[in-house]
Image (tube, rainbow, N blue to C red):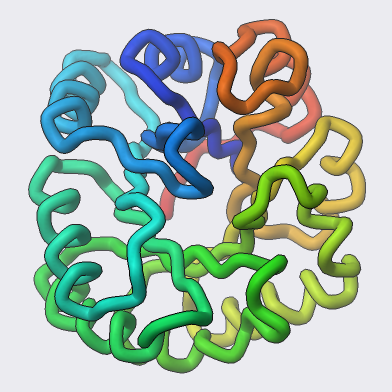
Length: 234
């Protein structure tokens, strides 16, 4: 079943999203790029906050829009992992050395860090091309997203057939799968039949669909109602 991932920009939003029933809580700074990172000390505070709850959804954290330099990427993923989150998300860009970055993260994956690759549909002609390398390196998952938030949402860049092929290929490698990218409430009926492991939201959860604005509990409730609630066992 498909779960709901909510990207949150503050400790206050973390608590609101948890109370609103989000299945995965994604720590991301939307004002700092497609995968803007929280400061490491703030990630630690988020983890400490969540640990005080009787029940909690898994936490993921982005590492920022990094250059595809294997040393930089491996270092940032390792630092983020030590904060105690359940998943670390790394955006893979076509420029630089994305293949080298994936290979450099294999030791971190072997140490138990659950890494999720984020592939941008508005930058990669074939975002599935790296999936064999991602699986070989021991990543936990792979997802599609958009890098340019002003260039339209996921379905503007890829057809449902193209998304389905990516998901099928990722599943064949044993990877968790996700779809995101300026998703709207009315995108959900088209995407649920593709059965990704999760759908990721930020824009649709904010007042006025402003991804840099504050999370709106009413908007979250509408998305929660549209994505059947399921326990996350990934």
